[in-house]
Length: 277
Image (cartoon, rainbow, N blue to C red; front, side, top):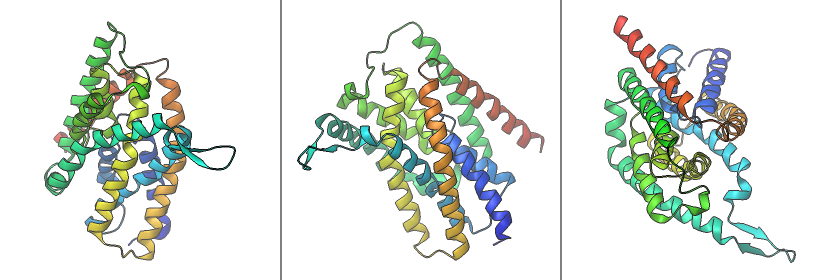
């Protein structure tokens, strides 16, 4: 591996990119793969493939800490005995249902997608396509009122439909949060409830994907590999704290169209760069 100081600054930058893009609907994996075209970390292809997924655990830890009171299904009474919060428990049941389609598709097609779709052209096309989708859906939503305004009001059928949309995110450049939010908005879920349900879904999805990637890579890391992985996760965690707070404040007063325009502009720049090159 290269100079540890050089690798440190590369990984810090990647951690910042991950922390920003994991929660905004602009595709963290797509951004990480694009950055890797210009700022490659040292290591084998297997390590980098694993790194780009496992670094997201730092971002997941941020959402768990910020939403702990909403996510943890137990509380303690005055007698120090835990009791189940039924509403939170039912949300997790719905999250599990929503995660089933994505889990099946990932297990069946993860290697195929990694081998054939992790290209700048595919990422750019996905960025543009879903950028247009965000703009069209938000324009359409101006003429209607959300039927579901709270995450607790999402029923089992709605959760499963949202999960079907999340399957689209297996293609790099789509965005896991973006696909989930687009699906939720289409079927009448408010922006705030859609974002919160996305946060809930991200926890089991990312732990599952990380476990798959780590087992595939193996549990033996060199000292430098472990340093790179931990540094990336810590930076992603710190940046995610700020980004999640920003997003939840932003969507109370604004729609998602700005992210749609960003995706379109970035996708066109990427296509133009690789076409001219």
